[in-house]
Length: 440
Image (cartoon, rainbow, N blue to C red; front, side, top):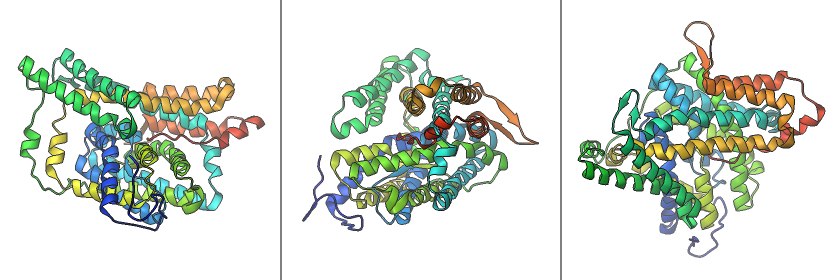
């Protein structure tokens, strides 16, 4: 679908904010594209979906202000932080976890100022593919047990529905998502999650009738008011939670470069120079910090929306303003959160098998940038240690009340090894390899 505007080309200048009905409709479409992944993170981590919608909208507006409305991107929930959020909530509570997420946003802000001082090259030097790739792989693989448990109807130690029924629902959700992702055309191709959820939901309803079991509870929807204030959470700043979550920010920070390059390739503009990667990173960081301060998931630029921009040729950043406004408005619709809460767990589990696997493959594609140097001793050592430390569950206590573990420890190990291990002269080029372009 090609977007048209009265009186001109769809490729408007970044300052031409033409708030017409057509712009609003395209903005609503962009939110529709992002919606499935946007609400997936809070549904998996226990965060509030309405807060996630609110912070996605406000975060996108913050990004636009910082970048002077020059980049047509939409910011929403980042998959990279799912595992740390789940662990953090279980260990330190929701408030301390969101406080750590807010500080992770400040890490992006600090990087933006470092880029202003030293240029972007220092990031590629200290965080090359040999470090970033395996860390991304750990993020995906660490989540694998979560996806399997959800797909089999296991919540903690409780089997909430028969395993066979749960697996059937999960398989339909997974299969539908895969089919639409592979065979879908046009805008349909970039919203496979939504179709997977619909298919799994319908199967759960049918199986519930056939078996006489209550597989879908409509109580959350019935009890939810039409209008409600999102359940904001005031953060707590717990040093242990902060130091656990902070290293996880390494991979999404590097990925930000790929996202900005990707949207620049679509619009044929060099956003690395104007408004500058230092400003896009600053906007992303401030948006993530804001999200953490009110109880929302960290933000990231959405590749699904970039795909929709490619299809529609709707290059005007004002469209993302409309998408942000709609997201904020929907966050106050209590019935929406109620409806999302009725989705059976195996529906999400089936989709997560694909999503978490795709995150792992993204990490693998980053590692592949090393090419035939993958088997060199230095690279093998770094990758091996990062993978085993991250997936194996190693934890190291530092004083009382603080333990570095999992993805965070894997990220720190990769950075330290990259700095300490001797490097051959020909390996210097690897520090300048491009960053991943996937949505994390």
